[in-house]
Length: 209
Image (cartoon, rainbow, N blue to C red; front, side, top):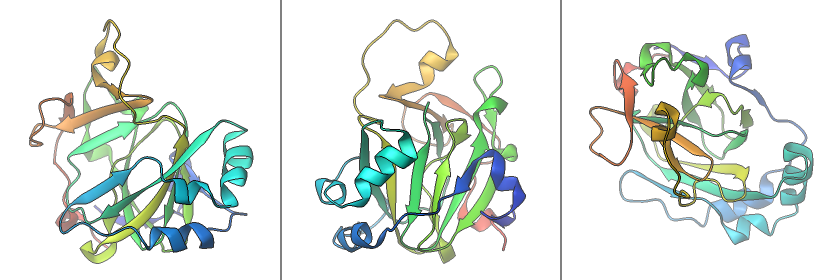
């Protein structure tokens, strides 16, 4: 799978590059988050990030006044395992070089998504992107398979504990939390997540410059 730039025209159906924001204060706080010994950690909301001046601009300019949360993903990841989507945009702001593996929710057929349709995009350190609500995504991979830190901005409450409801269709099976729909690959050892990914469980070694 060839790694494309987020400035490539192919990225336009998944999102857009952010402009007009200053990430410096939030990055200083992000540097204080310890990296895990292996794998990744996800923090949905961090009050130190949310105390910075840029929060108001993210909320008002980026989300039209919708209350938001600012969290992070930190660590290393070398395999896809899952894809998720939200019914809202998400900001991913890379403090380090990252690679996003993306798909289109509209390509889910009968509750299955073929990973052959995925595309990989390089986000350089210091660049933020908006991912549209129809964009399938999950934990990034680091450039050269290295550790990374990334800021995530989402509507407040996203990824929180799901409110129980009666399931009536396949999408309901995918609902895993607040504003969170997710599919896992059969190779992923977690039976609590709906298994909807078919095809190759994409690895870092499958990516090409």
